[in-house]
Length: 359
Image (cartoon, rainbow, N blue to C red; front, side, top):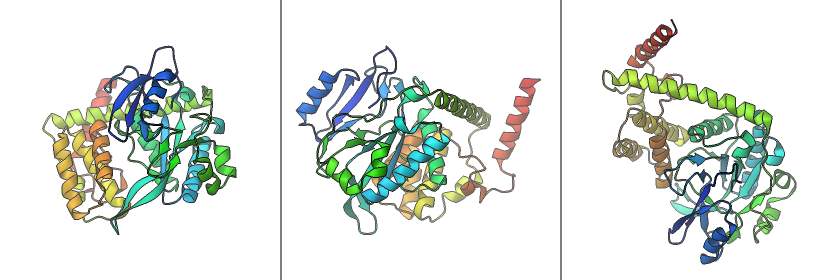
């Protein structure tokens, strides 16, 4: 799904939905890809959104920016995807003609109220790393996660923010999706604007000539924007690491705001946000995945979302990307004891230490 971006070989990870068989293939080896597709009759294959620098899941990855829209119907998915695309072009220095959209043909979700399965409509917006001149960026999942939250704060609905863990796979374009009896197909932004959802459904009855409808290119304005974003996140990452080291010198503690969040009865999106905050905090203080899972499951007993996949995604992302949501987060700020928390003292110690280093 991402073109070669340098002369070094890169690898795609492919997985069959039917029996779980998985392989690595070079991203430029069309024959090897087709052999695997033929084995499964061109249906129900998943692909990693990232490229690997070696045929190994632990190898460095070259990641696109991606944004997932999951709605109850295709009309709503199209509307939200268009809104998201224009937000990207207006705020992220990304030209319209390099925005790649994949209509995944839908999938299965659980309606909690009735505990029944239903079809949904899913779109994935993909921005190739070529556009930013990127190679492997360790912080890309975190950057993507927080940029997605920017879209949510801007009022764009039906965006899934729990899809940036390393285990996430996408439906391979132009292959049949047995769950919906349609193909996952690439679309252009112009097509989203000017053709109806019914027409998209018709297009999805057959594969399209290409897996992508855009030709990615390096965009200097986007490179400048991304470098600034990456620099900001690198500084935040370093700050969090230093803050944690100061905490661990005397042994980790649980802030009062976190303790109070863990005791609440929660509903709706607030409940999910609390799960994210707590999972990432426990990961940040070096808890094991078993402890993180216990804490989230204990919360979910009181506030059950009846969605094991969502819980697993939140926990997996947290273990891969430890983070303290900061005292300024609105949910933590509600329970802040007016700056009398040990975290405030840690921050003061950090500032004093930083000033001392500069002298």
